[in-house]
Image (cartoon, rainbow, N blue to C red; front, top):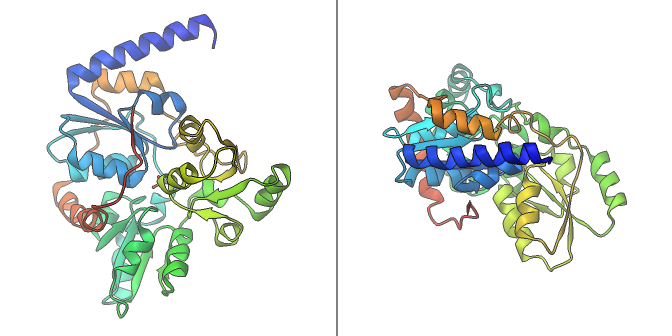
Length: 320
Ligand code: 13P
């Protein structure tokens, strides 16, 4: 960074710190956010950890550096707080695969089925759901459901397929996917293994089933952080998830080596947030995330059902 850019960054950081105090705000950042956003945040974590923090924070305002469904989850859990998303257009392609009308139709086709939806879904879809899950607890949530009841799992086919395999249950799967994780091919993993022999391959369960077959470890972003911490110093890893996680992996494990499994593992939505957006968001109080009250209450029941299962989870979210 040249000296002019350093000065601009320092000034933005100064303004953010002042505005944050004035607004009594907490800044949450997902593990895929750009490094400078993770570093300015009060907490960086995975979807589940950030939902849990949003549910408990005493702050008056939650600035959610992530994508829309994450801000919506915070708004669902904290109706008395203002939730801001710094970039209006930051959505999630996976979440767009399911609509509330489609879930209602599916329920009609499978009467008596339990609807499990991944938190990567809209508030309206959550409102049609019995219990939400994240990639950190999908297996555990599916396992907790009565074996005699069919389960509709939406909207991520790959995560659903993985949960079905791990629990030995047949799930009614949706046809959605995360386009970033779905891009990780078996060919790319084989190429990476050849380039970095001896490295362990760690992957997110949003990757395709055939790609997951090649993993040494499969886990959510927090699952990968926990796993890596336990490995001996000097270990190398090929990381099969959005490249943003490498910032935390490297920062928290300076004695280990990380390679992203493919250059395509970039979520354009997660990379939209800049420090200027964070400053503008706090200054102009934009963009407020709202969820219609009836939808919020029904969606909250599904998120609360998930949180009751994961109350004892050991969080990896870090305080900035
Ligand atoms: P995690 O819950 O593992 O952080 O993943 C969230 C996500 O959006 C993955 O694409």
